[in-house]
Length: 347
Image (cartoon, rainbow, N blue to C red):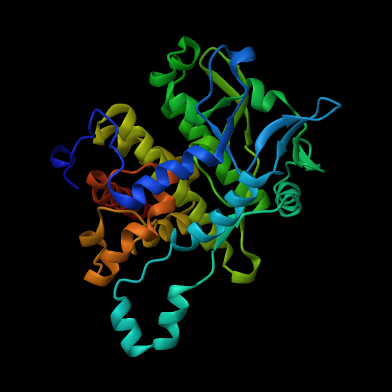
């Protein structure tokens, strides 16, 4: 990829374009019920939204990810539907219909690979990932046993958005150093406990921060779970976690710096610190096959006209959770593929 010729990021946020984008923007505004309560302890408002529930306190002052209520139920229902095509791409749907009609109808309704779980399912994920000292099942949803995680924890997303927050303490943290620690932590979780379900910049929190030094990383509540009925291979799940993380960080870095060389540095930081040849090879394969589903890369992925027409609908959920811009997705895909290839060639 020629980094000098890659498009820069517009200085202003893109306004919603068309019917689907307008729906996405409105729904996202509704389902983000609260944000992490960092103001009192840290002196700034976190950018991390809480989806699928809201932060509440019971009579014993337990902090709870409260999953009751109409909005939370609608969010979980809609989440399962919208995630169906997050990593699901058929390049020639009409050709598939002609040659394999049964497979075509499976493509139309394949079932979601992962989804926001019920409180009971999330609690199982918490225990599996070794997080039962930090989080646990509550009659309202999930209890945050260590409240300082949400009140005083430093989140990777906030480090990347320190230019928007304007807090001096955040701004002195080296985001690339934090990113390397985060990638290494994800690798540790994968090796010790298995795939997570979803890994975004909002999912990595440090419980201790001293100056520019970060310590004791912990996952946010692992509320996205892999569908057990899909019988997905573990290497596929881990690569999906890494795909989420790499794509989302690439977009965060591009928003932050507008510099493709910095994006390249960020992507390589993740790959080098995660450092698992098999998972990186699968990551490269996913990227080349059109995962995650995004707009703007239709030609690079090799989609037919029919698949291109369906792309805005299929990419709607990734647009909401990643905030990608059409002008940059093809270049980001090429960059990640190239960095994976470079890493693998050195092994």
